Length: 151
Image (cartoon, rainbow, N blue to C red; front, side):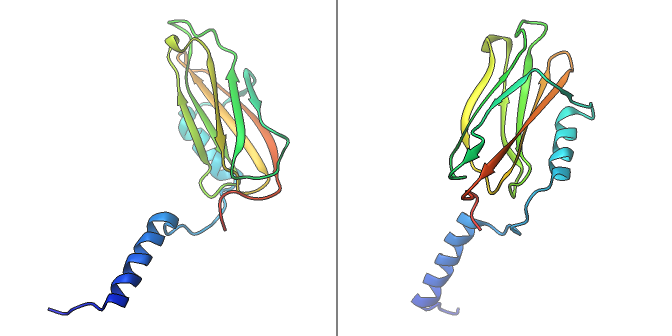
């Protein structure tokens, strides 16, 4: 049995910690085409219609690490007609999927707010599905002065 020196054990531990924090990502940015493919998958092939979604984001984000986002979908939220899911994508982040929200008629309103990370100036695309199969979309450009996704 071969023994490992303390220096080698520490180096392996540091490498394992770095891998768990940073992963093996290529650092490649997503493209609008990548985001469009995710929207198509989310929408089940239906073409999203513009409208019914309100996106509240700052026009300029001083720091991409924590950008406030609020979304609202104008929908009745009744037993037979309600928003089921909302997908938020950032088409310039390494991983464009930012958040997914799930709603039921008991939600009362299809509203959500959170803070997101943005790597660079990019479009935020919000897509909503309803229980009747309708798909809506909206987007907003955010200018980021200091990126928040590393690199």
